[in-house]
Length: 397
Image (cartoon, rainbow, N blue to C red; front, side):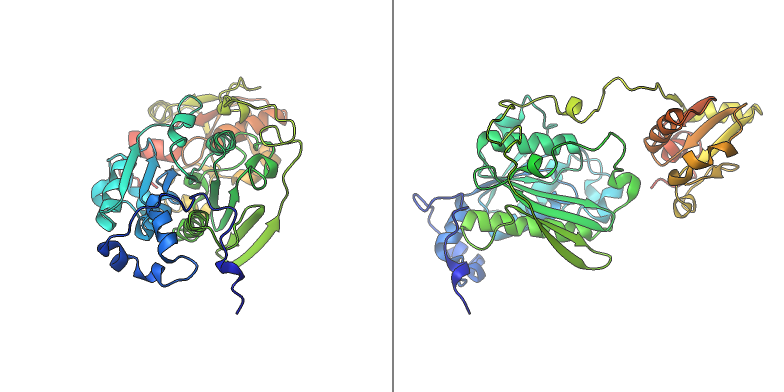
């Protein structure tokens, strides 16, 4: 068997000088690493010295943080501003039932310390933004992108390019996952692969579209593996390669991509030299062509109780309606709404219902763009809002 993979890679982010000493406990704990010639004592010392920042402690950040802690990464930083919800527990394995309501970074810290008390955990219980990103990322050697929105992905990418740090990327959607390593010093960045974000609302979140619980575990362990190779210095990095996973079919595909000479942040003549407004870049918060009106769940209930003629259109898929539904609502799945708009009674108010009130806003905009004339309303908070405020016997999901 070839020993090519044992050579130190130029992507190594931890130099050999000034490495820490391995204690007897370290040697026992990490013995399975030490007997690997590709890792050995030097590699384990690099892991002990390394500082890795995990942005997001959700589905992807959970397995990444746990495996990096188990591997002996000396300092792990955690960025998240959210609290643990019960619906997180289907996939975010770093949290437990008793953590519901706690800050995710605190829950993750406790789980990491229970797994490996010999490492340092730094909590950043904040929303990452253009004002704080450079200061938060600067002390770390490797950044892991475990986020679930485009504005933060572009923010993390640009901050990594400006700081010269590798960005270990992962994303998940239903049964599909992606992983890569963006490192402008050695290859392309995220913008080289995705120059422009998708239109707002066009890509549903996991909360809207669902996700197979084990999928972030598969993608997150790939990310953790890439981090370890970068630190130890060896193997073949995913720099310049996009790994695609279909967990339902259990198929992997790989796509090569190149550095874009015209990339505005890492290209030959970059135009971005500082962090920008990423919500504006992604079209979030911009003045939109149409002003979509929402209706509060309690107001809709009042009007229905008063016998007002209101048309209810549930745009969720039939399998979602089997979980929870409002009586008398007509089911027209999201993808069929525009082409079936002639079925609507334009003489009465039409209220659209989705899971959390986001897709209904998007479909109303599509109807207005298609020339629909009539009063269109989005149920604020969707069916979950109805369950919280009107019918508490209805399950949340």
